Image 1 (cartoon, one colour):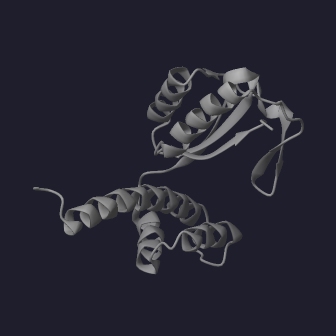
Image 2: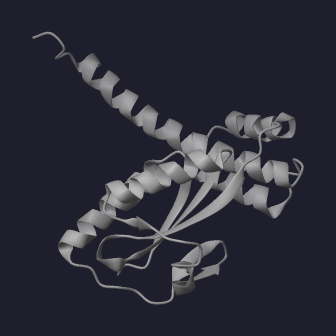
Length: 175
């Protein structure tokens, strides 16, 4: 009966939740660093305040937030926001916003995820014409109904994109 103790079960559950938190916290730290660098560490700037409020909503410790702001002022590495557009199963338009320090790595990773899950990476403007950006969020102007099979494929594609270290937000025009 080795490995069946209550402690082992708790240990494995904690490891899984800690891994998920770590991934979310690292994405938020990148976002905070980029905003802090953009506004020269001014905590009263709207972009940095928004990034910090997102981090607090995810229960990110305040010392991690402070460390990310401080690190941005010392950091020589710059992050840039890249918009990837593509088509998913059933012709659904997908916009993926990435925040990365390495444009080539991000593009290859996003391209691989799209091709692995039955999607195609499109050119700039191929999908964004069907969306309107309001308050930092891309909202579709029209929506497309999906079959159950295509909906499952789309769910796996968007989940894989969101799990990527590079991609921060994913928007679709699916119903």
